[in-house]
Image (cartoon, rainbow, N blue to C red):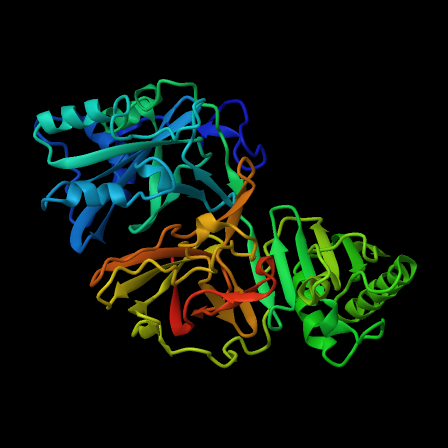
Length: 536
């Protein structure tokens, strides 16, 4: 492999260089067949030179048959063409039957200007997601109605007799030969080729054709995981640099006590599974209390509770490779402001923060029998068969025949069919107006944030990432889920790999602390016995 160095942008540890690719005709033709649609002929046409045919093979898009507005269409994604420090992704589909052109645009629905700003690149090896770049006017760098280049490109292609709609979106350059692409409604496209602009030829446009302004955003965001266990009383968060396990003190201790209770074992076993996935590192165990009683008393109580957790944890997992610190912070760092019963309950907690000495990706903790699921609170059926759901005036069916293992992630494409007489716009797969972790975010009221995997007593939520400029947490799933009456659409969700051969998926109402513990979310349902397939 060859690398062409460029200035590091975004996250230096994740993306540090652009991939340089030499166009070698024989190798290029061989590689191109991997990305061809079934039955596609890659032999040079009479008007092609061998070099042109080789370049076209290397830049061959990934083509999938998807349903848009009830019509089957061959959607082509790629190539991702590298223009210096900007990569431009090509997306195309036929414009027939009539009306499909506007439906094609709707595939890339997002908050803001219409266009492919809903498309996201995923570097599964680096554990990073890349969103559409933005320019100095804070506009996404992409084809837009009336944008520079968008109309010109369309006019040129239609003048050539092509009945296709082509749009482009700009991203930072991944250090990979291929990337995954997640498209709202259309699903996950694996193995999209990353090539130099010269190799893409007419299948790309320069970034200057997509914006008149300077491109200022070169960001990639690390993917994070979130798991809840023991009825949500144990919450594990994993970033690329640390794992944090938060245990509610109410499941560990009696009131005003530092002695572990009978119900503490399951919670500490879940925490030990997270810690035991690593051989060593820095481990901080910190006790917190609510604001009842005076500060000195609460500080002492929090210290004793942290010590009790540390001692018991050492009996469940070997801590000899860890640099362990144990401390209490009393009421000084509340998780939630206020004096309500909900706030005080959240503030009584013990946190275990692990900075691993080595890079590792622990699987979500689960009991010995991962198939021993808690009792379902809504209709339940096998994923390939699907389940019918009645949610107020809404009637819909959900089906998930399989999930695919892609690197350290599982990708599911749920088939959501609106069987009712009105459009489905009520956030049926969402956690209300909140993100995956329960933080208030009204922009996510229609996002698939509440579709979790069940592994025994563990509830594994979609992987997500933080966009610092907005200080908002985005799920790696479809962000706007609406379905017209009588229509079916695909909803894509990405989770961390559970390490199992089958999974169960559940949507269930949740208590959201941001709303004082109110229950939010769509109607409950469960899909079971969903096979996990390797690769595509």
